[in-house]
Length: 405
Ligand code: SF4
Image 1 (cartoon, protein in one colour):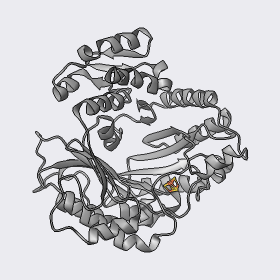
Image 2: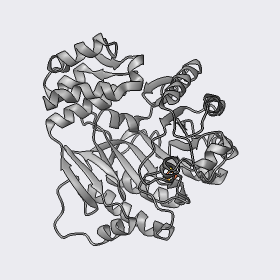
Image 3: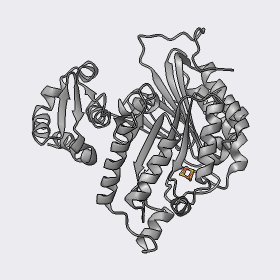
Image 4: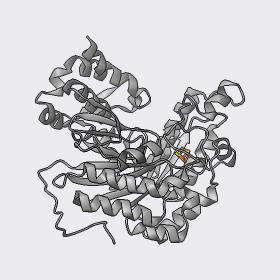
């Protein structure tokens, strides 16, 4: 079944409807990376079969046959711990139950170690975009992170993915690591570019509570990362990516023209998405949902369905459902939209969505930030300047202050 670039279908797209996205969480990993605070488990693989059934059940409960979707993202955890047949089961289930766009972006995160030639060939039938966790080219950093792959795995994975026909491949890198030098970071960015990816995501390391890496830094076993050096790394990466012809379309994301990640753009435009799976987050009909975290509980909740259906977008797996008021939605649209460096925040789209002009409602903030050289307007779009990219949270905060006043 090739579901990418479907031309004709009884599920014909209804162009007048806004498109939605689906995020599907697969909470299983082989080992726990030292920096990772995601909802994932290394000792629950025996649940995978039942988990797939539960995901399919939640897909059915959330399906709105007249609501077209345009992206599906399988993240984790490690979705590549599922067999291709299990992934196909999930994706087929989505496509049977949802209306979809004629060009559907289906991304799967994959551990470079799982990316055998046979696996990628099987995956290509259902998945259009791959996201590989490269993180670093440096063996000592991969070891510090307890990653279970090394760089030759990444090289081989990209080669096999191309052979299987993938023309949209992302690599993830992390910078600002304990003990990392600028030269080490240059090597990682260059090694990623040498693989000719279509998209690169580069994230500053965040030392999350409860992680092994935070513990080791706190107890002095590893040096505290230097934020000034991390800023230099960001600048260096921006220069290298621009020289290689990539567009920095978001604060932490670079892509070749035409290869921007449509799924993540949905988040940055603060548009609806449904979160499916243990611990998944969703945002639809002005309600933010978070599912129960533990896979056992998730499975149990979807086996024992209540007799009365819950109000959409809740399912029996929902742990919290928080209504988002218009004001909060507006601020979130500004914060996330300004992250889109290339496109910026469209003034027209804002007015259409909220019935008031951004440039009037926030006239003082925009004037102040523009004077400070942090914002600029290009045609219909409000954008962060180059110097604002490293202090974007400060810019966003200026808009939030208005709400509190
Ligand atoms: S592979 Fe990803 S989700 Fe799994 S432990 Fe590592 S960082 Fe976390």
